[in-house]
Image (cartoon, rainbow over all chains, first blue to last red; front, side, top):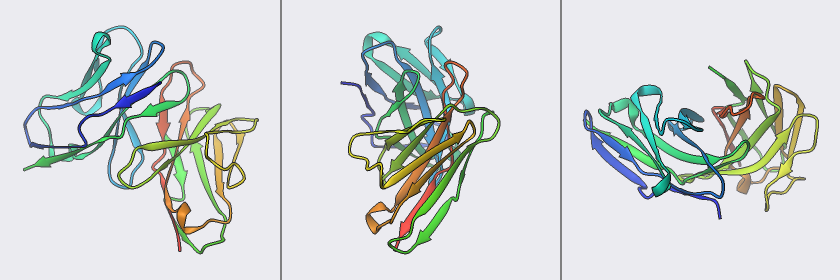
Length: 111
Length: 116
């Protein structure tokens, strides 16, 4: 069965600290992988995507993610978190059409 | 970058009313649009896939007569919640996919629907 698991429901980090949000997937074919961010009451903004090629993907707002096929993971990282990064983060996997979303990880940032 | 406009952003109406939500791709053509529903503190649940010029494909458990979807052009899809009831209150989000191969879905800002 196709699925996406985000093990951490809520993470709190201090401003300036590094961040890693975990994402594991189960998918029958070669997956396309995405990270989206959602601010309260808003839609989703694409942070980055992986289709093929270099397994380390750079995104907007200083985020990056690394695709590790052997671990079926696509973890999101940022070296230094800003207060404005506080939001809900969703990992998604899909092919050319439908996306399957994880349940999200809420990020809180301490001053 | 690609922009998807969703309107209205918030609607409050009485039980029994029908509500129409619009989803527009502003700077690209979208043969496929998706409608999601998001419950509080939950992930997005795909309701249906809307294809331009053809009938929408609904996910299991989604009532097609309740949630009418029309995708009349390459830039516009509408979701009509018919005879809405309080249990239909939710956050509805649309997304659109560029016709260009391998383009990701771009999301609207969502519609907060509250049925009294």
